[in-house]
Image (cartoon, rainbow, N blue to C red; front, top):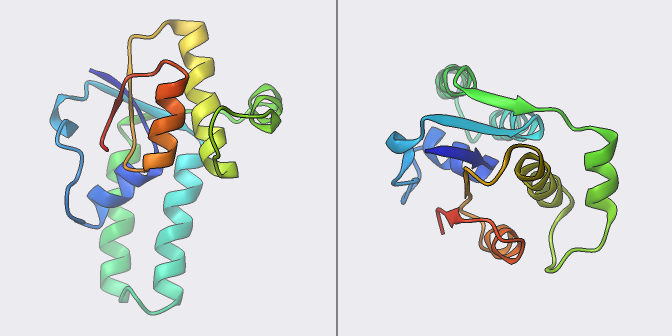
Length: 138
């Protein structure tokens, strides 16, 4: 399966949180916005600086993140993506979630809908569904 992955899917897996994406092993090709990389590194750094992660845990999470990122295609945040994210949405979305959604929609328009949108975020899932995307993870 081809799958757009938002950061909630990666972070839940990376931190061993409950209910990770059950379809993880079925993903042949994962892709996301370049934003995913930023969100994941900032989360690890924030947790480390707040002393929620030891040096050893931080090192393990960073190594795990690099391993995951080696297998995910990252799409650029273009001016077109930013302009589209500025527009009104069908449902309320945060700034970062709107960037994920419009990146996936731009991919769909260019390459077709042969992918599934994966997120653990209920609001983002609702927005993706409202745009006709098949969603897993919620």
